[in-house]
Length: 354
Image (tube, rainbow, N blue to C red; front, side, top):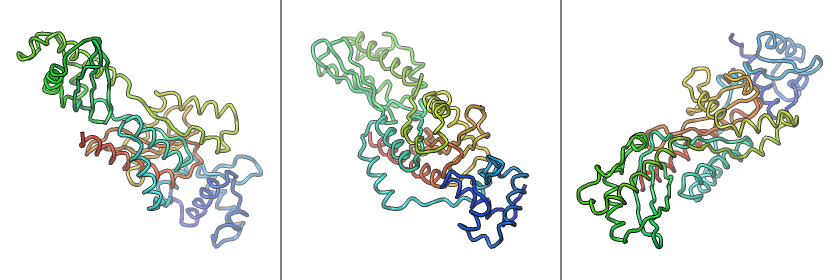
């Protein structure tokens, strides 16, 4: 149901005050802190009506009101100003991400750590979708007596190394690498995982190196299968929950920290947050799932603010924050949108520079 202009101003003030103080908001507080242009009795009546309509709830009989999930949803969709990331903060964050490393794991961990610091909420990121990942380059080199080093570079910036019990001269290693690049370079993980390797597929010019060709080819296929089986998730800033009074209860804190360690639960939350549902669509491509909008009951005390990130023009993964429903949604949305763009830009440069 629609709220008139005065109720909207009151709801906005209650959300902002409750997010800042974590204390239920009474009519006298609104009169003292906000220029609403009406008396305390009028505000009480408006708050009572909004409570009846489900936008507010009253934790205790004598307490003020706090926003309900429906109230937060109305605020996010209609009332929330989206803060701007200040230029100096943006420069600092971009520099910190860019200087982290060119390794995918380090980039994702650093990005999550910075997002957690910006929002004071745990940050989560999914690794780039394995099905869209391509093998960019293969390196083979001798690594001591009877050892060969196989290095695989993927389009996401990830590297996979295999030290094999085999031997080859430096010139033969280069020949093998060139042939393997001709055969497997540019292949997506889906194709690599399905590849069949045996000596019948050895190129004619590689017949004298057929055993090594087959061994290295099998390692490439196995690496692709392992990489696609369980792409990692990254969680940083779990200590941030200690700043929130919602987690002063040890049992609730334990449940939340357990959720952060469950890959399936995090994948479900991030996936649902990125569903193209009108009710969760936010500004700057950010998606918000609030409280009871989570499909699983054990996730309903929390909200998720997330965004996809792109490598080139393709959506490759997601990044976001998870926390109590009492969160600064504006700051979270602005920070998530900024970090998604920053991560995507960096991964795009790394991908196309290889």
